[in-house]
Length: 149
Figure 1 (cartoon, helix red, strand yellow):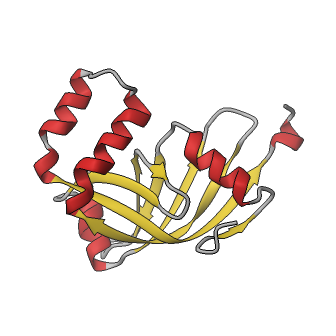
Figure 2 (cartoon, helix red, strand yellow):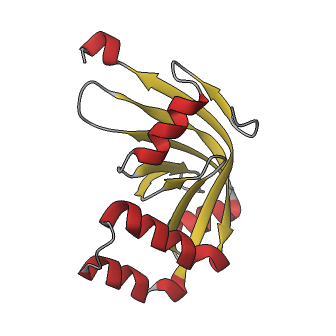
């Protein structure tokens, strides 16, 4: 088990890590601001001790994380039987890693082939930042036993 991450729920670190590494759905990130919380969906990648996302430097999420870097999140599908991982973490902004992270995310979600969408995302690279979420508390949940399969 990775000592940097607090894991609870029915899954151990290995199963939680595998889930986060292999699933190809967006993460829902909750941030706080002066007008209350907001939930936003982003592509993400997991690398054993951190979740990584990318977004535009001018986004509301970056503004909120600059003011308050504590976040909540959930990664779960919407097809039964339901399972997933939710948790909390501390976000940091990394403009210098935007290209590396965005390319990893494009490969994960778009595949190896260049697409119009991937070219468009990369054309805005000078305005992107990477978001690294650490100090993770991960809570798995799995209704497979109750719902079948």
